[in-house]
Amino acid sequence: MKEEELKQIISRGFKRGKMDSGFWSYEVELFLVVLKSMVPDRESGTNKVDYVRFQKELELWRDYRHGGNRAVMDAIKGDYESYWKAEDESIAFRVLAIALANESVEGIVEESLKNTAYFTGNSEQIVQSSYMGAFLGHLFNSESPDRIKEFSREAVVKLSLKEDILDAKLLKLELNESRTRYVVEFERSRIELLGKLSGNSTEKYPYVDTLHGLLEGEVDEEETIFEAFTAIKHGKDDADTDRFSEIMARYIWKLRKGWIDPEQIEIKEYIEPDIFSMELGEKSYHSLLNRIELISVEMQDSFEIRHIGTKTGVYRFFKRKNGR
Image 1 (cartoon, rainbow, N blue to C red):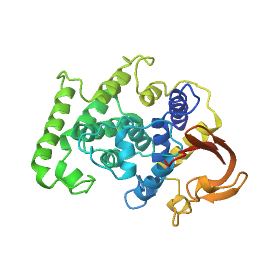
Image 2: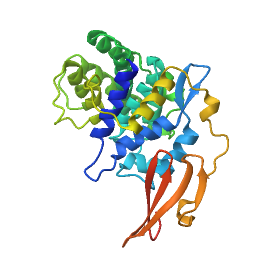
Image 3: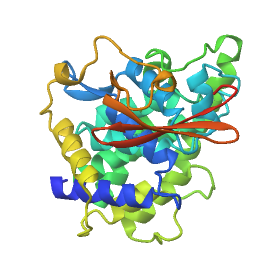
């Protein structure tokens, strides 16, 4: 993949991720949250999510988000009641962010598994994320269609619950007495996905269908719900890019090429002023937003809305009058 292609992917993804209100969808917002949380790892040569920062970014995002799903919202609160069955519709955008920021397919798969398991222990979603990560990694490394499918299938064949998930301590909850049942479910999901890749008919693992359709040019961009992957399909189109897309694309490219010193983006001490306690016109510093200024306050029936100006744009924070 060339830098110009990456720029088109980002531009298309951002434009298709805009809602009628003019705000980005929550999936695009989480795409950015993942990228903001990635730090180069000198030992492995890959870019990994810093999960201390990731959690803080999620807690901040909760107050400016435009949508969400139960898996993500529960993870922010530390509520894992539905963890084992939760379905997370934002998985496509988060794996896409990881794949764009890394050249190592092995590193992409590892980070995709970890980020998926952060929100859900659903074996189908975890197994599918390994295929997605491998597929996108090989796609962005410009492999041929046949080799992309072959190598990505191999990632699922090699996927080990014990070594890749349990020994790596990716799951948020202990299995304990449900361990045997989960082992069976995980293996069933892995075999089902391999069966689908061999031609068996199943409506499960929809991201696989979308990826294959895009690779083969058989997906109507007006019908697919996976805007991120539609962006990949149009990666070489000459779309106009806005300033923010260009900045993000350049930053991702530098991450991908290993041109960023981790010390430049690591946060050693978090400074997080309460945005809802700031006075109108007050300026401050926030570790996740950099220089900020409260530029307006709006009171509605149920919400207090605050517009915070930053170097990259204006954030619209909201809080229920009786609490978040």
